[in-house]
Structure formats: structure tokens, C-alpha cells
Image 1 (tube, one colour):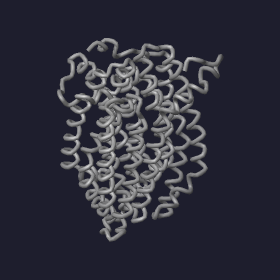
Image 2 (cartoon, rainbow, N blue to C red):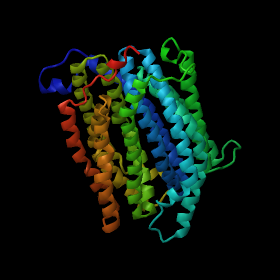
Image 3 (cartoon, one colour):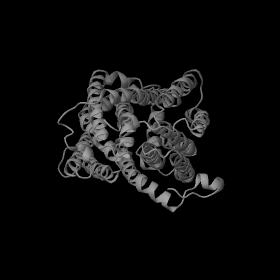
Image 4 (cartoon, rainbow, N blue to C red):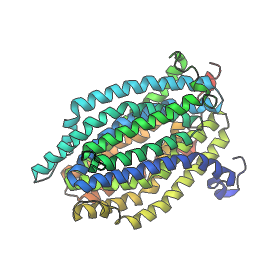
Length: 471
């Protein structure tokens, strides 16, 4: 990654070696996320074949589960800033201590998540049920959501374990094993979905409960793959040797993880709750809006794997360069990664706009829901380059330890701008669903401008682990 072209093109476009390195990191993550989202789409279609109420009940619960998932992701990512940089300077003991910190944090979050969802899950689901003259449809949606939630609680523990191991493997440059585990898990999920939702091969027809059971089984399988591989390949992952012999974390590192990681975890939680609040605002337009948004989001997630994977690539590649003290190379590499992400999503978004009407047709729902889903999907596709730039900017700032800045950039903006706008527009205007959704999405242009200024100024170019190298 040391040879660069001249001029503006050289700033945005790397050479063949650069893209080989980037794709080596990003493609396995793209494959894993792509397969996960594709099977998630098939899962969504399977449930959608049963009926609109079942699909909507699961969609609401999954919106709540997203808050927990992102709390885990944020906590692990906060610690992962140090893990990637420790690995970049070949400090395996530091990686081990980061791994232990993840265990403590995730154990606490799993316990809190179970308590909240078990105690208040039904009340949370009710927040999304509005605007229908047919009360029986709302009651049916609540019932299906409640059934799905109780089974999904069993899957919180393996999800936390898998994320601890898989994130550490990625920080150490091993992206293929988490990818393989994800591939195995999604096919297990798909197989058991088919068997348990529809009652195939002599199994009972469980509907939404079957979908939840299949997901939980797949999570245990995914966790087992990464845990077994890590412990049987200690020569490649030396941090795992003796990792459970003690649980001591140096006070200086623990303090730095708290200072850098806590804002990031709070950011992810607030962001997830903010997104759940946005969905609740959209639900004021009725159960059709909830169903259409579920279809649109599931499909757009399938196409978002590029910029999601590029965010992870920025964390790994740029984080290792910062840890190695290669500041100028980190800056140049980051610029090219951002450009690659945006240009890729410009092409992919254009393709999705053309394909938008075809995906909703796969669902067993009303024509109104299908047409609304296609329109929402076009909006999401058109905004994909904006999402790519925001995502890359966020990961750039985070990789350099600017977690307070990312907190302001991400969740504070969401709660101070996007959520109030959605709340006002959904409750005090008669704006239809599509222009309401578009208006909220276009507010992200402001974030893109802020992200551009912060990244260009280079406030994120920091080595965070130099002080701990000797510990």
C-alpha cells in the first residue's frame, strides 16, 4: 500500500496491491454479511408467506432485538479499537487483555437484556401497534410477537459469546473463520426455518415459534464454530493461550477502555433505541407501514453489505496502520477506502432502484403493502451512497479513538435532529409514509457534511496503544 498515483485520482484510487489488501479483508466480511442477509431475506419471505400479522410481529421484535445486538456490537467495538492496535504492534498480551474486557462487558449486557425484554417485552411491542380499524389484526400481531420474543431470549447468550470471539479474530486479521461460521449458521437457520415453520419431514408446524427456534439453534452453532476453532489454533491466535487462567486487566488499560469504549457503547445503544423510535414514528401510519418497512429494510440490508464490510475494513486496516505508527499511510488508505465504498454503493443503489418492484412480489401480503414496500426501497436505494459515506466516516473517527466525537456525530444527531423531525411529521402532519420516510433520510446530508469536515481535518489520526506496549 506504499505506491500511490499522482493527482486527485491518486488520492481516491489505489493501486492493484491496495485493492488486493482491501478485498482480502472486506470480501470475507461481505460474504458472511451477504449470506446472512440473504438467508434473512428468505427467512423473512417464509414468514411472510404465512401472513402479514406474523411478519409484522417478528419485525417488531427484531427491531427490539436490534437494540441488544448493537449494544453488544458497540461494547465490543469500543474494546476492539485497542485490540486491533495491539495486534498491529504485535502485543499479544494486550489482545488477550482486550478479550477479557469483552467478556466482562458482554456478560453484563446479556443479563440486562434478558431482564428488560422478559419483563417489558409486551409493552414495547404495543408501542408499534397503531392506526388499524381492525383490532383483531393488532391483537394477532401482538400475540405472534410475544411468542417469537420468548424463544429469542434463549439466543442472547450464544450471540454474546460468538461476538466476543469473532470480533477478536477479525482484529487479528482472521476474517475467514467468522465468515465460515456465519455461512454454516445461516444455512442451519434456513434448514430449520423450512422444517419448523411449515412442519416438514414430520416436524410440527410451529410458524413464528419455529422461526425463533431455528434462529436460536443457528446462533449456538455459530458460537461453537468460532470457539472451537480459536482454541484449536492457538499457534495462530496466541492471545487465547491462558486467557481463562486469570481475568486481571491492567488498571491503565481498563481506564482507557472505559474512556474510549463507554461513549461508543452508549452511542450504539442510543442509536439503536433511536432507530427503534423512528420505526415507532413510522408505525403511526398503520400496520401496512410496519409491514412495508420490514420488507424494504430486509431487502436493503442485503444490498448494504458493501458499505458495512468497508466500515469493518477501515477498523482493521487503518487501525493496524495507526497502531504501527504509519500515520500518513493510514490517512491515505482511509481516503481510498471511503471513496471505494461510496462509488460501489452508487452503482449498487442504482441497480436496486431498478429491481425494487420485484422483491415485494415474493411476499404473501396485500398489493398496498407491496407497492408501499417498493417505494420505500427506492428511497433507501437512492440514499445508499449517503449511508456509505456516513458509515465510513463514523468508522474512521472511531478507529482513531474519537469516540466522543462519534457519539455526537451519530446518536446525538439522531436524537436531536432525526427523531424530533420524525415525531413531529408523523404525529402533527398528514404526510404519507413515503415522503415522511424520504424527509427523514435526507436529513443525513447534514451528517455527511460534518463527517467530511472531521475526517479531512485528521482529528482521528492517533496511536492509542503506545503507552501500553510494555504491559
